[in-house]
Image 1 (cartoon, rainbow, N blue to C red):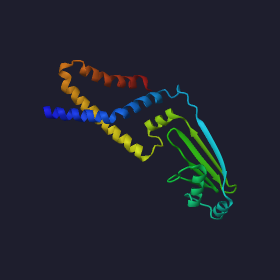
Image 2 (cartoon, one colour):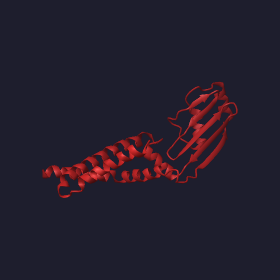
Image 3 (cartoon, rainbow, N blue to C red):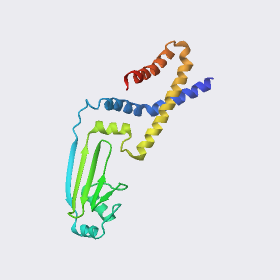
Image 4 (cartoon, rainbow, N blue to C red):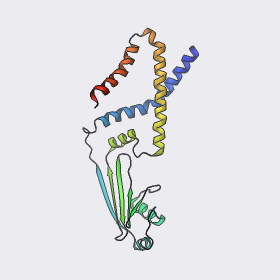
Length: 197
């Protein structure tokens, strides 16, 4: 029994150590998300314009793309705007290119009209609170962050279940243990049933 309890404690403290920073992040961003209307954001908008080089414009007008991003055009846009357009979805419509560039805490887009050669770029930065809120939601964060959230959730489940088993082990000498656990279940259920419509 002592070996089992020692293993349980080890699983509990290891999972708590792994979860500590993530739980703080998700708890704080839970508050900021819940009070998003009260937290004033001042988005910073950056706009840029550029002209497509004539040689590249002629080349693209002679063979207008219907999908994808030709290498020469991608390289020019990336160097002109200091962007990375690898693996970005492109939309072509009547000789116009549109690329959406969403990211955590902001948004951006660019459009290019081949007939005029005019490139328009707009980027919006909504600040650190918005960035952290988007991390909380996993919005526009990519595959690596999505994996992190899943692994973090597994560590939280282990932390909670081992904590529950430790509570069970020590509840004999602490009579308020199960009423408090029950309260932790009953309060959210009652709030959901009575106040969420």
